[in-house]
Image (cartoon, rainbow, N blue to C red):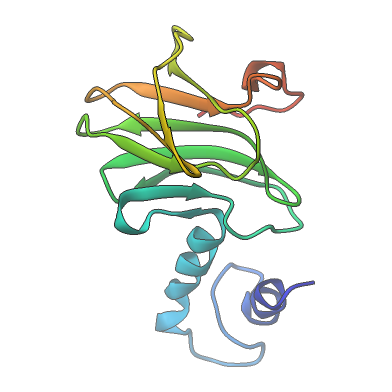
Length: 154
């Protein structure tokens, strides 16, 4: 078990509040624990999106995490950091920059039409143009999200 999981188990009460057992008060700063979780599954410093930057040993599904660059991200990450898919909704129509968490090809398609999107690659970063309000699916061409045994596309 990693340090993050140990801290959460030690401080999370049965009702979901943060604090050590037997304390009569609640940690106001305990709300900061959500930042730890977000940082484990998604980072977007300086506008570049990184999925699964920390390779957790648990599955994580999340929805509507906002990034720098005005994108909403939904994704499913399996143990060890394997990203099954990411759904990116562009709120402003800006250019999307992504560093995939896996080696190999990346497929980006408009949703729901599944039309492939033209991308540009530099080093380990992929970028593509988006349209305001449009949604895009990021996955592997050899393992599309619709063929996965579990895909919670929110």
